[in-house]
Length: 164
Image 1: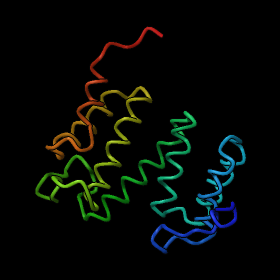
Image 2: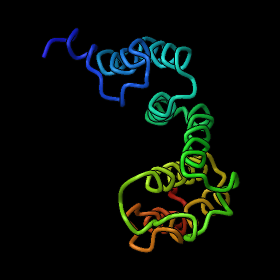
Image 3: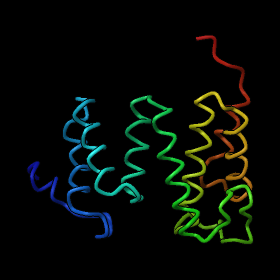
């Protein structure tokens, strides 16, 4: 597939403006050029600042670039969107297994768990270990089958810091 066809593909459910989707796709074509790829993220955010795909894309961009503090507002927005979509309490700490079936690895409840796990790990990586642990513990409590692998991340937080 040539670059232009790849840029024009649509698969974010049809509710993301084509220009924002094109900007998200373009990141992959210039990933090695951090400045250019960041411009595409900024373009997508300008066009569709509240779209889940854009917030998720921005989170991933900044996370993989190891610009963790810049990733945080995007994962927080992603989590807020997941809370809203699921009609959960605004404070994720108040979400219980009575709010949704978290035993299956699909659907909107999964999106909430995925966002909360990402936020928990990001907080821990930012040095906010207790905040991260709390978020990961909530995921573990809601996901009895550990589909999200939050328990493994929590065990990493229990290990002594690496000297390097």
